[in-house]
Amino acid sequence: MSRIGVSLLAVGMAMVAGIASAQPTASAVSAWVAAPQAGATWASAYVELKNPGMYDLFVVSATSDASASVELRAAAKGGGESAVVPEFTVPAYGGVDAVATGPHLRLVGLTRPLAVGDTVALDVKTDGGVSLRVSATVR
Image 1 (cartoon, one colour):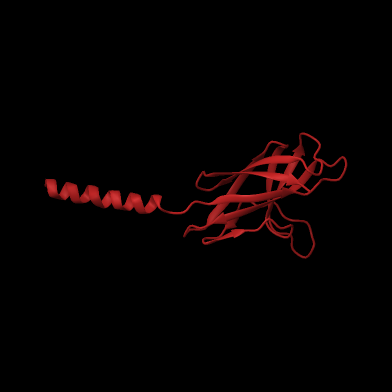
Image 2 (tube, one colour):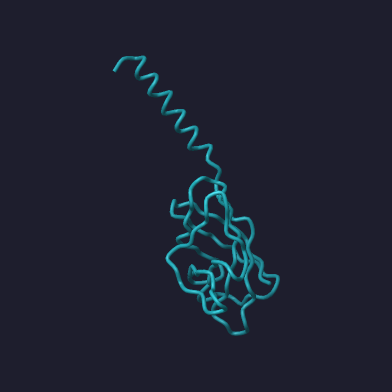
């Protein structure tokens, strides 16, 4: 390949890299934890996730400083129990609201008592390996 060809290839690759890096990133905006009943071993956490990008994101796991494990839960239907799911979608140019009727996290095996006003650290992971960290207030 000629020097001009190599130069054009390098410029083209740099432009593609610049476009890819200009893609807006997802974020965890706010979160809250529903105060568990006395003696409960789990609590539900609700996280507002924003995805300004052009591709859907998938939440595939999460951790918390207040529990042994975290389950991903689907939105409850008809007032019933929410189902454990392997992932949930954060739509492109959209988000997931931190509402009790939406997809959420279940903190399982609480490692400390949670009272109204306490703060819990959450780390939500996407299918692309991105960590979205947020503090959740117990209410």
